[in-house]
Length: 509
Ligand SMILES: Cc1cc2nc3c(=O)[nH]c(=O)nc-3n(C[C@H](O)[C@H](O)[C@H](O)COP(=O)(O)OP(=O)(O)OC[C@H]3O[C@@H](n4cnc5c(N)ncnc54)[C@H](O)[C@@H]3O)c2cc1C
Image 1 (cartoon, helix red, strand yellow):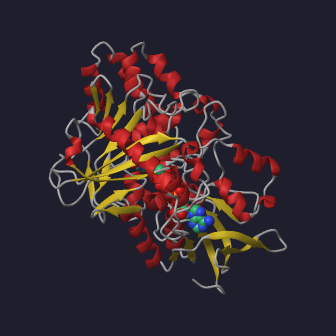
Image 2 (tube, protein in one colour):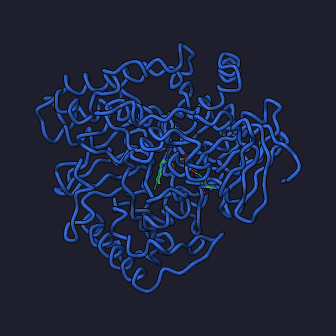
Image 3 (cartoon, helix red, strand yellow):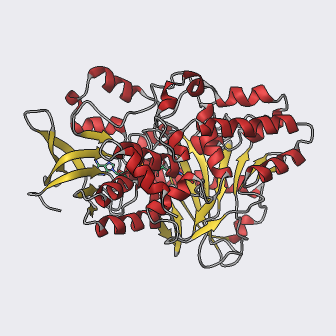
């Protein structure tokens, strides 16, 4: 890191979007530096270890990885396919939707298997299942980058009807069967779904991507960040940890000249790309630099709810590996998970057993994720605790966590009655953990909530009013590894010819 050098690109944040932008731009001969506030790169790709088990913070499985699917091709371009330890999830069931009555519904990989499973469970609903699958695929066809195409890559932005269709309404329109409706929407925690707001296109892009190739990464998602960093450095780029950006200095032409780090250092650049939540980016780059209407819109956008995650370490060889995830719904309204109270929390939760290279038969650990509002931990909001900036939250917070961990374990016992005897140790993360490690304001799961009632309002442009400031990351187009990857390309198309780049990606065998 040099204080005297002027970099072509200064990237703030090393989430997957920031790293991928750095990779694309550095590989085209630009000088690039990524500045990350944490001790570990990767944002939501970060891992942590307890009792020698590696836990992911924000990646449990990744879709669209079948040959020919977009993330498969993007990951070939980033050299992330052959170099990492991918594990395909079960063809017959990559996701299980499960209800309080014990009934289990399996989502199979590929549309043939997906339909076959559901048709066996709902013999009178073949037409609705076919209609649903056709609709998902039709919607996905309308997003050119999702299909590695360059036909006016953002033309979906003009399609009001597409963007304003609501997921819950659509699912209700194709079947009267309440259980089938619940099953089809049962994976909505993938986008922190809100019944009256979540768009059908978000449901379609995400559901389709998992149907088209669901994989886990053995030994943690941080390998993606490490591999990207290695490539960036190979192209001459720099990735710097413990470098929190707190402000920016401008020249007379209203261009950013340099960013200011927490320790007072300054880094000069020609262009700046922020991988940080847009509302937080406005604070960093100075609110007066943005139009009031824009500031108010971005700050007024609702974020997706946060989460409380329990991480269990199992005694050796005691719990069989689940090569699928479970979405457990204890309320028949699968959209109502955020509507909880002290008694019924968590109303729904997600279960995943991370893949390791040690054993395919037994799980080392399990993560269980339930929704949690930031308000539930607000009394400790003034505390902050990361490895880069350690702090204490106090005994009250620890007690709160123990109580929530116990509630989740009790709910797990309804599924696995003997699970308690298999647990070696229990750990957890709260909305404050996500807030502190990712740097948004309330530990939101997936950033800005997409709203079918105001579809364009919740989409963020990669360009800003500041002439040399750009955005990237999950808040641009779509969250998730796939969404942030598409966002990275959209940001880089400001600098690199779209046809050239897409041809380059598509030509990789
Ligand atoms: C619990 C959870 C589970 C998830 N599961 C999945 C899954 O199974 N599959 C999937 O595809 N997606 C999943 N996601 C979503 C996915 O992880 C994210 O959408 C994606 O990783 C976001 O990437 P990003 O590029 O927006 O950057 P982020 O991951 O948001 O990273 C932003 C980075 O900016 C840094 N930063 C912030 N402020 C500053 C500053 N001032 N100076 C310097 N650096 C700063 C942060 O420290 C962070 O490293 C999950 C998310 C969560 C929270």
